[in-house]
Amino acid sequence: MADPTIRMMNIAVLLKLQTAEGMPAVPDPAVDAIPVEADSTSYNNPWTMEASNEATGSLVGGAALIVGQAATFSFKSRIKGAGAGVAYSPTVKPPLHAAFQMAGWRGQFSAAIAAAVATSGTATTITLPAGFPATARALLGYQLLIGAGTGAGNAPAVIEYTAGRVATLSETFNPPLDATTSVSLPASWSYAGTTPQDAAARTADNPCATIYFYEDGVLRKFVDCRATLALDGRSARPGYGTWSCTGVYAGKVDAPIPDTIAIPGHAPPVLVQGAALSPAVSVNRKPFNIATWSLDAGSSLEVPDDPNTPYGFAGGQITERVPMLKVDPLATLVANRDTVADIGNGVTMPAVFRHGAQSGNRWALVVPLAQPVSADPGARGKLRSEEIGLQARTLGRDAYARDTDRVIVFN
Image (cartoon, rainbow, N blue to C red):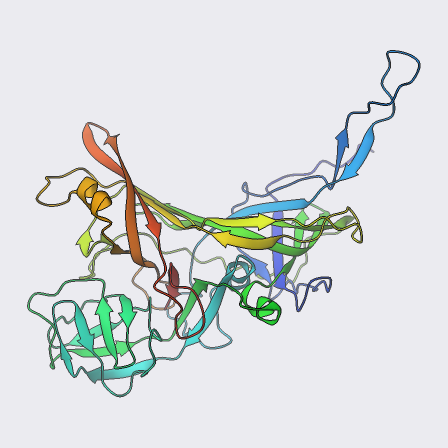
């Protein structure tokens, strides 16, 4: 009988967070399977070779020097919510919850807040009623739903929030919001970057994960994995995340894909405004007619040498972050946008990317404080475009001790 061949498209990825480094988890196929693009996975060999320089008494080289190396595994996923009409809760989470956390994006659940009339408002702010939290940055990045009164039908993102319940918004309203504006907050999960302040905080802020990769009858295991995450998307298409993981290779065995595996298979939301009043893409409170966007979270992974592991390297450690956002709007008149002047003047601005309109399967990327740092000429067909780079800066910490350079919110 000939050796069975491996079909690369018949795969499944299971991912479960560990309680600590050196303590592998056991992913449950019914709970821990994540959606990945079938042709996106890659991994390396835990061994590599260095050429021998040992003299052999002839021109023939000596035995190869086999050395260990850090294990890598990467995958790409469409970003989606729990499912249309699904209500989020502390236990009902987006499908990629664990993957976000493995990359240092800590999740936070926020319960729904019923509709109530605002105390006051302006063109860019709203003072929320007593049912909303009186804690600074408790709602940073979240989307408010305006159900009645001035601004009805809009869903602005919160780019700053004070203990006095004043929310600064990602949109400009004309007429200004006022005491007729009725606002609610849907149940939401948000994810934002973290900077652990001590060793104890790393468990929650930068947890590691165990990954099981099934490939057509073979199971490869990786433990103590952390990742960098890059996001990208296009107009009228889903957003994607690419996770580049570094950890410790834990071997492979012959094993079938489990019969009990449950992978969230519903369609992801796409980047279109549709019938919504709030723009799908806005930068500096203006709609941006982009073709593509990307966010490189700018995280760096360092892999410590450690002879007390199977291959001489420990799991990856997240060490720094310089997030960069790139967009390619069509060029316009200086009166509408002057990116060169904005760069020279150090101007900062909010940026929002909304995917989908159905509760339970919609999400938004919110960058509260983006600073333009580059603007190069581009082309979209026969139309002039701008290739704009913006650095995502931080306002400080939010109410949950997370950084505020970028937030993803599912609601």
